[in-house]
Length: 128
Image 1 (cartoon, rainbow, N blue to C red):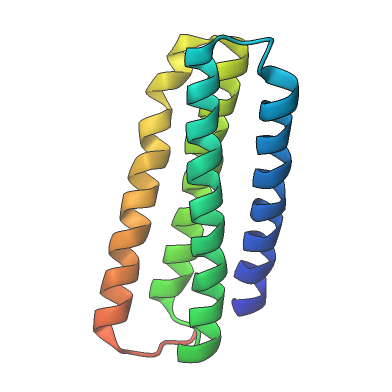
Image 2: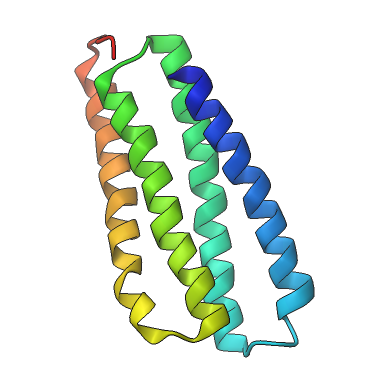
């Protein structure tokens, strides 16, 4: 689990840099300021949660694999794909109904942070 989350975190971080650079250099003149702000929000949350996934992998290495940490990392990955992904597509395509999907990713982020708190407070090691 440790290696899997570190790998996922590294890939998502690399993508966040590439996607952010694409937005800064290729989209700035092609989409409006409001759409660019939406895109940048996606990059911001993408990067924060890429780091959170890396930290989850490191925690699994220090404290051992647990069902709780498995769900933390999984929720952060799903949240990044849904939240940031929907904002990227929304800002580039203008498809407004994608805005209804974004909160699902945000909910996954919140659930991941709560799962991290529960995992930290439980102090139990469980093999997954």
